[in-house]
Length: 131
Image 1: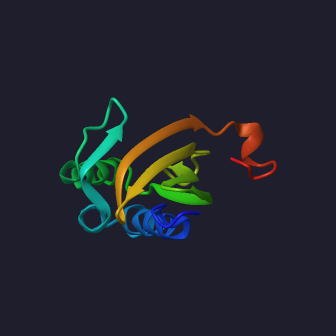
Image 2 (image 1 turned 90 degrees about the horizontal axis):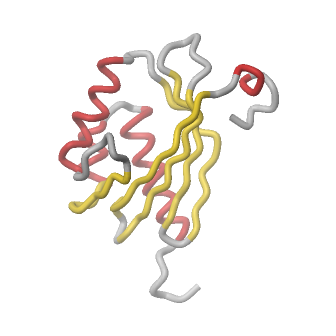
């Protein structure tokens, strides 16, 4: 790896720390301030761009689903990209949504985000834990 390439473990640590602070500890304003770059781009047509709107967006999720939880399954990093796979449940009995988030990290901050969600099928929820 050349010296101008981002350190994969540094990018992964940034994203994992962001995930923990924003979603597990439920401090989205602190997470945005600490980990999102000024030009943060959200590649989701239902979510606006910008670090400034992130706290209200996630705060709204917590207000609508106070029992929401995020169960991280895996984190994968390559160059400046980090992929998280986790299960999002909105209430305790919920099978949840399998989520894959892709983050691009630049200069120690998250500058881009993509996400894909799908319902966890009942037959997969109790089988091998892959979802």
